Image (tube, one colour):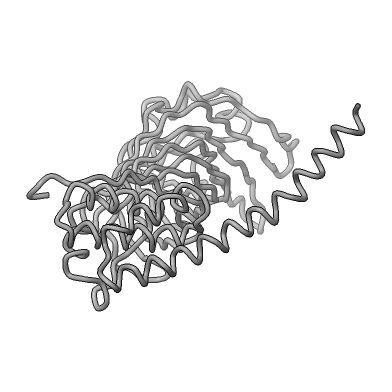
Amino acid sequence: MRKSIVFFALLLITLAGPISAHAQTACAVTLRTARATYDEGRLHELPALLAPCLKSGFTRQEAVEAYKLLVLSYIYLEEPAKADEAMLALLRTDPYFEINESADAAEFIALYRTFRTWPVYRVGAKTGVNATQPHVISYVDAVEGSQVSYTPALNFMSGLVFEIPVAKRLTLNPEAYFQLRTFLYESELNLGDNLTNSSEGKEVQTLVSVPVSLQYSLGKSKLNPYVSAGVSVGYLMKSSITMSRLRVNANSIQERTFDVTSSRERIQINALASAGIKARLGSGFVVTELRLTYGLTGINDASSAFTIDDYLLFDNGYADNSMRLNALSLTVGYVYNVFHPKKLKPGR
């Protein structure tokens, strides 16, 4: 019994290929016949001629051409409702169909322009790296005479992307990211005779952010460049400082990590400026974007500069300078076009 089932399954698979190929060949002949029928002016014969292959048998490209013939036929037969139906079917078959201004009939072009032919929205994801640099608003000295500096460090970010076209060149771009931000801290106290006490550390922040920006397209091309600006609201989930201290003529302080989330502002607001490109691939775009994030709000309160942690203050010589965070990020992702072709209302 099992052998019989396997045999019949293999037989069906073997026969399916030739049958499908025959159907496609037959429909290719049907399309050639339809072209000749159209050229001869026998427009009323086209719907019945094309219907079987439109149901099954045409390739996408052949179906588009068939629907185009139907649209033109219905236009010239003065059946506007059926012309609209055929145009809608064409756009659903190939949402990326574009008219040829120099070759297509003026009536066809005019009808095409009465339909929504652009994506309703795009959805996708991005991932990349960011480099965070503190901007110190006010310094405080935990160790008098020490020199404090901050340097950026790389970390990871990833998120969901939405794009909503609102005008010919303008696109609303809300996003949602999970990201890690890191920056380095160094403090040196010169003791003379080329001797120094130094503290080194890093702060790592975990947060989710919701950027909303408005993109402006710089023109259509292979790379589709754009610029954008907007704002971002972030929610801090966790922040930690890892610190060690090297001391002359005294025991060094071993590296240790401190949870400083309670000393950080949970809500952070930033301004955004970006530039990017969108390279067409399949049913969407590969998006590469460089973004500058400018901190509008501080990440801490100056009143807590010396109360962040006693161990940090007395053993590591660390006080919490008041600061905002700026960042530069590079992300790569993919957005998928979602189309819903429809007849536009007059005046749109």
